[in-house]
Image (cartoon, rainbow, N blue to C red; front, side):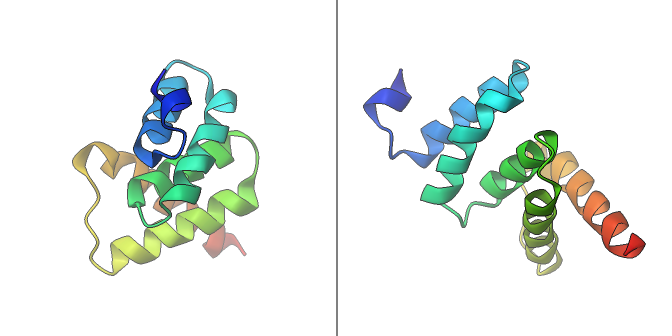
Length: 102
């Protein structure tokens, strides 16, 4: 397992978290995703992934904080990888709806 060999690899942590998420274990994915984000907070994909997992765990305040980062960065012209675009769009829509309701 690459995670055990290279625990400080943000990309390995992220890939492991994504695999867990895709295989129906979002609760188990949150630890590695938080670690990936902690190691490389500038990665927009890591922010998107963590926001989704925080939301799935019921941590709405943290999820919305992360979604606001995504919205701000995308609004400022940062490009989202094509396979993350639907995920970022959904987060931004949720953030915008929540902000409008307050």
